[in-house]
Image 1 (cartoon, rainbow, N blue to C red):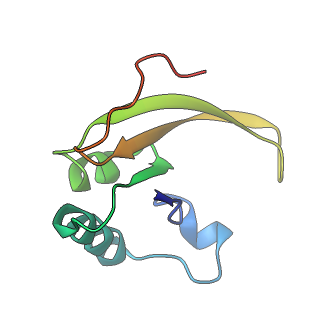
Image 2: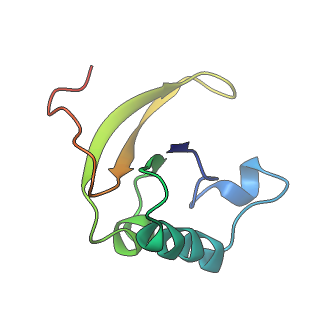
Length: 90
């Protein structure tokens, strides 16, 4: 299952219903307990997310944005320990 939670750092500026720190942490705890599905999610690359998902594999990647302004940013792909992600991502 692919999850795309609200950004941690800029969520309040982008979403009407942004997550608070506890909401992001609760999602991490839930994913750590679930055995019903395998998951992968993407997040903004900030220290708080690294901390919440400290025990899971993470891969940084670059993403280009163009909705509000043209820019690129480093994001994180985090995945279930039961999954294998190819080492070479496009």
